[in-house]
Image (cartoon, rainbow, N blue to C red; front, side, top):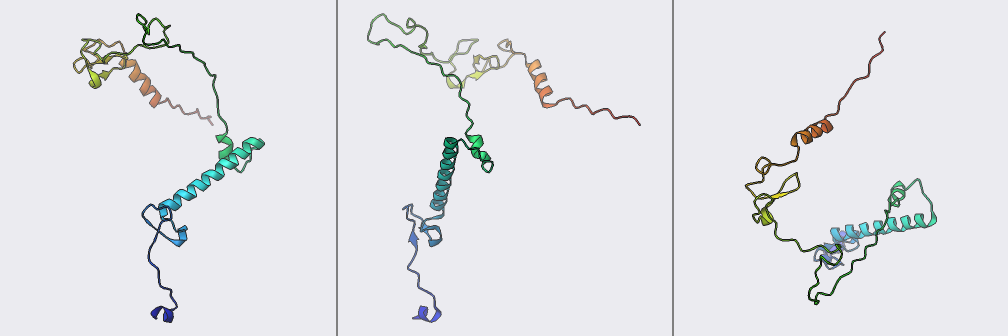
Length: 172
């Protein structure tokens, strides 16, 4: 009787999310939890964006009010190369993948140090010269590295610090 006197309605209890995610929903979010409601709104916006972009592509219109859609339609497609790889049956005796024409790459062996041929596995160190080395030969002075670190450092410094010259002032 107390709710009749105050004019408030009694609550029926918490409402679970209509997506059955286990959280509670509210009437303000269409009986969904906040996460499911945000996902629904995001999906609706993406559907509107996709429909409008498809419509503008089909019609050929570039609306100035939607610059994002116009820029999203610009796609550069490069030339397509068709490669035909012929495979030989593996049951034939005397056939190998090396005779097949060079398209099929042979299985690579374990990773080994270039200097001492020691197996390195996942612990190998790749050098800037492009070779793989063990822990002993990983330093450039230990494997006579042909990479020019000095010129690479100079180029990096020159790129990071461009020369800035002020314009000459007109003398009065």
